[in-house]
Image 1 (spheres, rainbow, N blue to C red):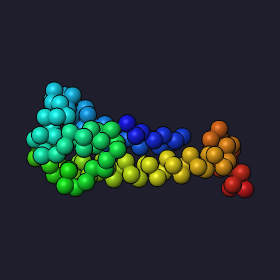
Image 2: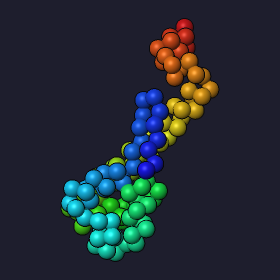
Image 3: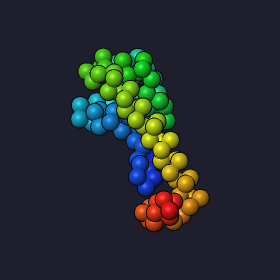
Image 4: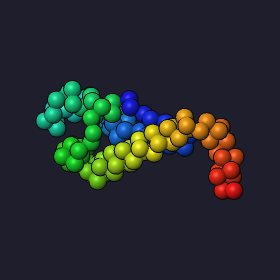
Length: 112
């Protein structure tokens, strides 16, 4: 699963939630794929964070699982934002390792 972490952010793909929903419903990826008229491979990529949650896919999930499409689209949007935030923070920490160890020290030094 494509989970990206930084000091203060974690980006979890919507597929993690989809995986939980399937587990709770005791539904296989193959069954979901069949009900959504999609390939099992695409469902697997979606669950593993290798494919984005499109509005069309979100609507199909709404139809099959009864969870609003907006919910799935919001998860994808939050995931994409947190990827950017975590990546940026990790890059900054690589440039300035003091920030990663003690953000208050660096913030104080920048404020002076």
